[in-house]
Each structure stands twice: as C-alpha cells, then as structure tokens.
Length: 199
Image 1 (cartoon, rainbow, N blue to C red):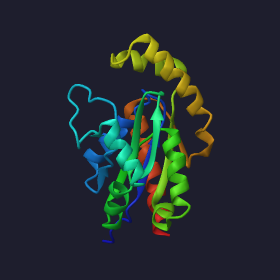
Image 2: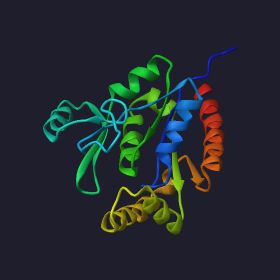
Image 3: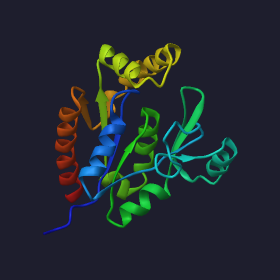
Image 4: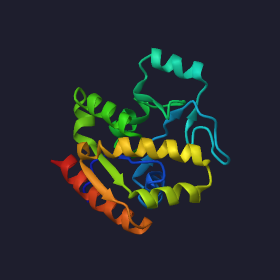
C-alpha cells in the first residue's frame, strides 16, 4: 500500500463556523493528521493548555519571533490580539510526511498563499477551505458558546461579513449545516487534496 502524500488543509471561516471542531475531529479520526498549533498573545481560556491549543506568548515574546521572521503568517485579530503560525511548525512535519490541518483567519490564508508562491512544497500540498455560515445560524452559535458578550458578538459579525467577501479566493467552500454534514464535506475535499498532492 502506497503511503498517502502529506497535505496541509487550511480552514477559515467566521468565529462560530465550527472550524476548530472540524480540525479536532479530523485529527481524532485520521491518525496521519496533526493539528498545527498556532501562536497567540491572547490569554488562555478555561481548559486551554499552552502548546496544545495554542502557544501562548507575551507581546514581547511575539515581537521577538516577528523580528526573527519566524512566522509564515501573523496578524492582529479583532484589533486586539495577535495570532501567527511559525514556519517550523508547518514545514518540518510536512517534510517528514505528516499531514496537517490548520485553522486561521482570511488574512492568514492570504499570507500562506504568498509563502506558497516561493515554496514548492507548500504550493503543492496546501488546500484552502472556507466555511460559509448564514447570519442567523452564526449568531445562534456564538450565543450558544456563551464565551462572548453582545458587543463582542457584534464585532465578530462585522469581521465575518468582511471575511465572507474573501470566500471566492479559496480552493473549496463548505456550506455549513450540521457537524456531520460539514465533516463529510471536508472528507470529500481531503480526497481531492490528496489526489492533487500525488500528481
């Protein structure tokens, strides 16, 4: 049996679109997949573990990594906190044959596209997926998470509307419905990503 070529699936979508849930399920059900642990300056939420959910850095530590050009991408999110993806956390595992899944915002995906323009491994292995959620469902999901107040939700909805305008730039779209339907759609995309990586 030939080994599947490693792929990098990058999922984006508004807060509450279920992208983290899809990433977690893919890793849980497919042994060849790992989640890329991204970096942030925000404080951990209850239950989050440094190095598992995110690499939590102080603003000063983050600045040092930026100065070293250690990030493939990084950005301000909601104008308050920074998030980024270290190059080493993506390129090294893929070179060793590991498939990866990553959740970032649309700014981050654009930075990955720019990085892929000069990195053949990234260009061949990377597939971008945008999760589209209708407005009412998105607001209901955000309220259901009970993590954000109404002002925060309003801000996230403004961001979601901006992000939706970028959807056409992605390789694939998932029209979000139920968790199982969204995961089935992701698995179909994975088949196509692997076929492309094997060419």
